[in-house]
Image (cartoon, rainbow, N blue to C red; front, side, top):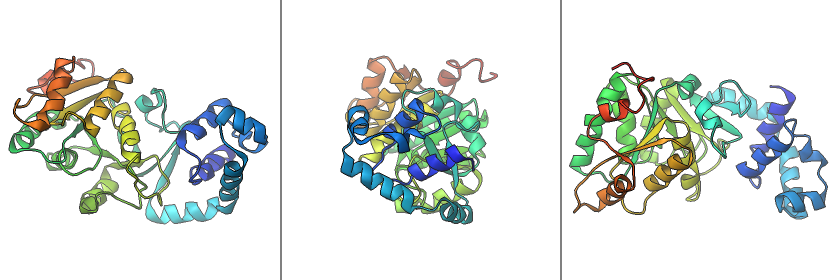
Length: 295
């Protein structure tokens, strides 16, 4: 681990230093020496951070041993990926606010494949939603598309499982650290993904998932993929946050239509009404990316 990567690695373990601040530091000074050189008034002026907070961050920074943490993570098969690493996902690097680093377990090359599609939706899918997911995803998986989702219960879980069941590949982007899989009921599924697929997190491994982590995490789910498919979503839901972030990232948004009487279809139907592409079959996704798939 070179000097800059080591600095970034230690900054990643400072709980009071968020990813936006680290990204800004890295953008201003790729050597990260600025972290040690800024004066108290400059921290306040450029980052709106007061002296006591910076003192706490620096105390935490110097309290960590990179060598001990690396040894621990090696034993857990956890890897660290800085923004400037060649293996950092190409599409994710293009968004306005890419994570300055990622922690991962599994096959990181999956994140740089050309054919990545994100799939999100309700935690409580109907029978229709389950059938629609299988109907649309199976041909995608058979055409070697990598399925990206968030390991949540419901549509996320079904999307990951569909990839496994049909011999495909899948990526999970989680809201906490790799030592805290959420929900716990998906630990077995997560273990499978960590072995031969991929799990990503923008948090240090010991970070417990917080409610506010998940909307922020959604920008990674959409940003790493060519497009995002919505399968059943309420009018106000995390799935719609992901869809709107995909639009901001200039990515394609797809939605499977649902019954006008089902509240879990209101969000997806409104997305279609506002310009998302209506999907009834995988071919409706393939045709948006003719260079990526041989029909």
